[in-house]
Image 1: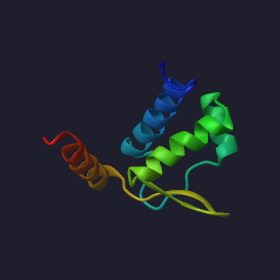
Image 2: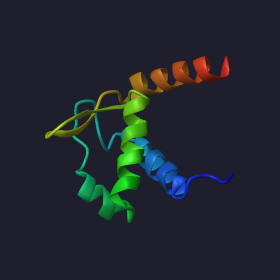
Image 3: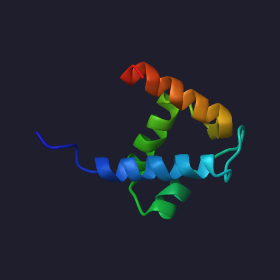
Length: 93
């Protein structure tokens, strides 16, 4: 069966937000733009944005506080180290 429709767009939004965090546009503790602002920035639907944010949360990069927004939990070296550890657990490298 083929991939879920929109999965490629979710991946792109995920990568671009992650790239923005890694590039320093958003630091640890910073609040990310609202879902509405992200829909405009990425020309994507709200469900697509929500899925990308959900993946970032699952990877331990962000945290969502209901009514407050999504915040960066890990940035820079801490994030890279976290992702490398997660990758090692997943792929045994």
